[in-house]
Length: 274
Image 1 (cartoon, rainbow, N blue to C red):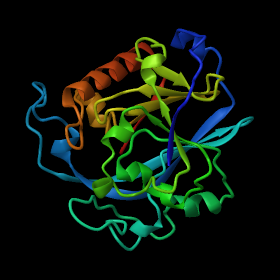
Image 2: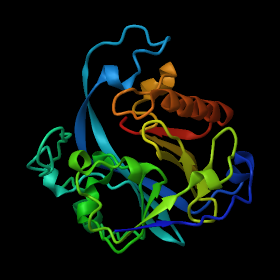
Image 3: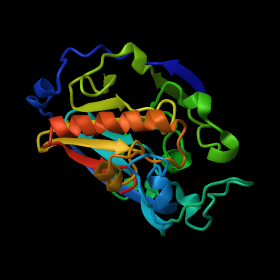
Image 4: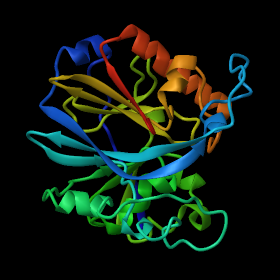
């Protein structure tokens, strides 16, 4: 696997007001490729001063990824979901401990869902490298570009997260530090060059974690990915703590997202595992 730095042009537009004045011919669809059990106490940082009592409760939540369809540029995936190996084995054929367990129905894997509709993605943009976001790479084409925020590959633990990247020809790193901030959000990458699809640097859940914003004609949609697990994170204004690299940084990213949503209330928001 080759690792390359990708050069993304600096943003010509410096405000979301201007960006939203120019919606693009792009739509988004959600794929659910399985489910996972998480503890409610981990979806909310119970050490936060405003957390209060949080019930110890198991939540079964979806594992999602997204198809971005651009009328002119083609189809793109945001994350890869799960591959078919999880249909019969919650560990996806990964041996040893600790290995995360996921649950999947027949024909729920990403390859089946894409091939049944004759969808051929031109690239895959990864929010981060946790297994529920990248396992599907095992059955996706390897000769298309894969993109990830800089810092993710430094954290990637194959023994826990799986050898999902082994056969990928090239992974391109997005160095957000070289890109402009678009307040109230931080560093942002105009991924397709026309203002239709943006990656937003939201570290904390992982070192290079990014969220996404789709600027379509039906209105902008903000995908928090795992910067925000469920809607309660937004309602309570408290970030998750489980599976989180830096809880303080995760809270800073959530605070930023909340500020953005307050400034632009017409933006639809979709949480990572809602």
